[in-house]
Length: 303
Image 1 (cartoon, one colour):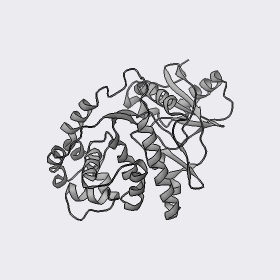
Image 2: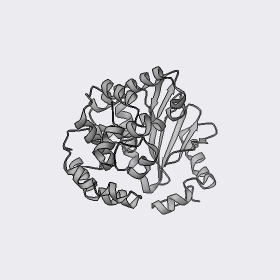
Image 3: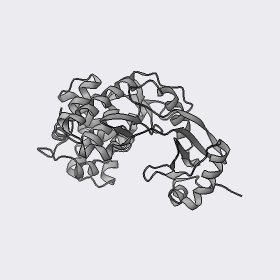
Image 4: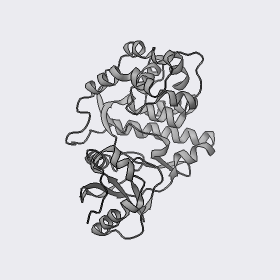
């Protein structure tokens, strides 16, 4: 009997990713093997299946995402207890009947995406400070040794992202007046920087908070080694969202001085981010004073 559905490619996985009747037998058999008791409760969001069971969390990696398992497990082990914000400790990781898994701590608190809208200015200041401090601590840690960690060469990743940048955003629906500016803008921004340990998606959905304090940072499977400023895209787009006060607090807590050149580099990294969607951002973030990427940089990354 096959415990897991086929998920050798994205098309197969998409068909079963939300099908608990298909995933349930494998989840329960794996938990029994791990000696974890209790009824698993599926988290409603996330690209991979994740379940809460008591004080633990089980994250699954179908075969099509097998390469992300050693990254998640390796980076979690490297950062646990070394950041000013809690991260999940790993209880077990490996493969079971062809699917990968990580069993980790369940952290307390509610998603920052839910808490942020009702926070006071003072509470937002405090959280922005904490995020900046956590990012600085993360970037100061040596990256773990993960076999075949993609991308193996950051400079090649950046070159590939630059080469296809305008086309990717056009395919997502970006108007030509914006897309035509991208090659020239990127050519004018220096992007060479030392490689550090990156989370890559530090955003409100991956942070937990309670009583105005961060209680968790999780979801490390997309971690990379690359330019530190790449990690500011997530907080700017998905947390502070053009709020100059909050973003300025975050930058200063990190130890960075905001200036025009920094804003232009952050605009460039926003365009180049692996999951970037400029037309989507234009629809939900503040409108710039004029239809140029320089004006956009001044608007979204003001501090």
